Length: 464
Ligand SMILES: NC(=O)c1ccc[n+]([C@@H]2O[C@H](COP(=O)([O-])OP(=O)(O)OC[C@H]3O[C@@H](n4cnc5c(N)ncnc54)[C@H](O)[C@@H]3O)[C@@H](O)[C@H]2O)c1
Image (cartoon, rainbow, N blue to C red; front, side, top):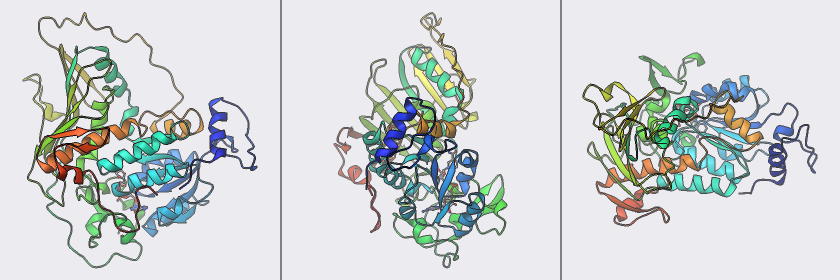
């Protein structure tokens, strides 16, 4: 482990001062913004699937390292980034000396590890959602970021946040359009019918390192189903000889319901949809959680469930309840004519003077009661700022080179995913949990405390 290097700190300072030209560091090395072309040296970990959505961002920078456990995916990425060194073990990749920043697109059970290891080495991180797979992982990712705040830019891959509806919804809720905020619901409609891990089905083909894929999680027999996804009613597979038929960010649905690899919709669409609901709240950690849903399965995350957390009051609102629903659980609609089931992934805010219902791109305010003439609400007069930032990924690369500010840094995103994951623990133990957020400790359930953490295979340290 090492702390961020002096040269990188100097680069940030120089960048924040908007200094033009190159900074030649004492070592004679040119870093980041100060390197010719103003480009970051990026390591891409997990080269196919979701990583294909980041190609535009990556081609604007220098990709100097690529890492994948699938040697065919690695070779295909190598053709796109011919200057990059190739790795199959991300632990070795992160030790390459000229890296400034990491883009992590692996399956979920590596996310917290890669983020923490990267930040410990002084590297900026764009990490695909979910930020973590357990409460402890979420806590450690956030605390590692907070230790490095002012030196590193982080972005959790909840790119829908860049859409203006997130900011407009926040303005309405925080600005008082529905009065005093009382409760919040977010939901997603995806379901699954998996009941146990896949059975053994021969050994992995030689181009897939199954042991490294499993990584820190307990060992499970190989099965090609983990590499084969349904996309728009077509089957796409990493076993297809044509890379055009490999999954592009849908294969996560083949492994993320298995608890050793993911937490189903909590980590998947929950990361996006709770972001829509959480963004206006300025919420700190919750003080309680409870959950219910499908019968408990120790291997598989539930398809249908909901969980409710209580978040303490802050300087502009009282205590609120925040509920996550998935797989058919839904909040009650505020209007009989409004069928919330028609909104696949959405959020509902309840206030003393009305409701706000939204999805990722649209929103509606429903005032209610005789006093709700909205005279109490002053719409924001601030003009929407013009920005040169083109998208969510660009927000991060720009932040790495300038002020380190991103909208989904690991501070905000760490609190949000910890809350969702605590809700899952409450569902698992079937009990209302009294949570001491300062100590990351459940006061009334030793079983729940055990479930805040995962057991890892020997040789895999979360804080490495
Ligand atoms: N932000 C979004 O909208 C969005 C959309 C889809 C997926 N995702 C996220 O992206 C991640 C990847 O999902 P996916 O569908 O691309 O999965 P995937 O199974 O297709 O895996 C992506 C790539 O990672 C590689 N990989 C697997 N284990 C690795 C390891 N240990 N080291 C290096 N590379 C490894 C795979 O070989 C593959 O090339 C998930 O965490 C998912 O939640 C985000």
